[in-house]
Length: 85
Image 1 (cartoon, rainbow, N blue to C red):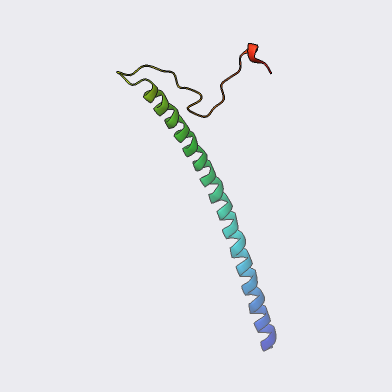
Image 2: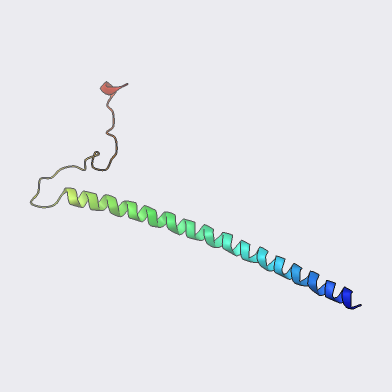
């Protein structure tokens, strides 16, 4: 009788731990999805701020007004129709 009771409680404990782990994993997945969405929004805001800063620095009063150079941003210049490979 004692062995069967101990086995029953051990099985119940293992089942409870398994259920708790499944619930916790589900919450972690939803939290990770929310954090990834927040990170994407923050990255878009940072990109917009960097673009606005570059435009503001390109047009400071008292300095020569120069458009944002593609080579300063390490972006290759766009090819025209005459420059086809």
